[in-house]
Image (cartoon, rainbow, N blue to C red; front, top):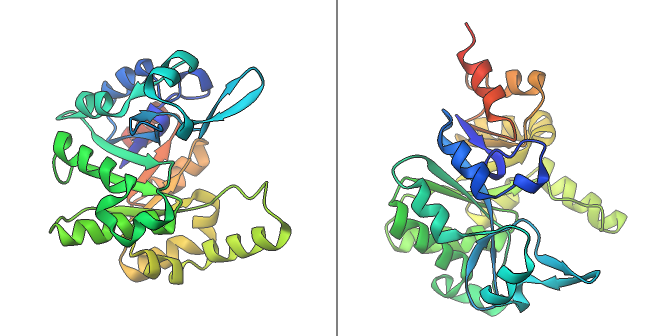
Amino acid sequence: MISAHRCGAGSDLDLENTRAALDRALTLDVDYVEFDVQRLGDGTFVLFHDDFVELDGHHVPMADLTFEQFSGMADHFMRYDDVLAALKGVKHAHIDLKFVSPESAYVNPESTYEVAATEQALEILGAGQFIITTLEDQSVRAVRDWADGAGLDLLVGLSLGRDTADMSLVEAVRTRLSEFFPGARIRGSRANLVVCHQRIARYTVARFARRRGLPLLVWTVDEPEALAYWLAPDAAWLVTTNYPERAIGLVKAP
């Protein structure tokens, strides 16, 4: 299956997570539409990749802003609930959470921000109409524990392929090893969906997922050769791409 990354904005960064990109993705023969979700300080969820907005050369954390403040500062944005409503009955949602809760909240999963976002998706879209992904182990665990307690069959994926540019060498090596060999993290987080950068997936993670019978989501696959590889039968469960038309063309090619 195919997922339109950041609403399928392609190479135009200004279109990522925007209404224009979403409206276009809704017309395409994709199975999922992927988008990034941030949480503002007043509890409002919005589509935005970074955890800050820039003001006079300074980074202002999203968590310090109300929706009114954020909407006056951001060049583009969409409210999370508006996107869910637009997808309802049309496409599945691939919800990539970019925030975490206060550490104390994880004692009770129901009190976490991640579960609040998941409950909102469940209320608007219904069960089986979305997946949740995140880089954070504790976020996956919170949503999985809550879903199990509520009797919900929900796919929650741990994403492997974190940016290590700002890490120390030791921390970067430790992170990459935990991604190339993710067994302990998958068990600890209770992820039932493996989400992985395509290069790491080719080395070890695709085999790991197949051996354990877990669905594999690979990101972000744009080049024709890589798309052909991952769209082959049984290579991956879901392929996320910035160029969904290119992927659709390969799938439909005789």
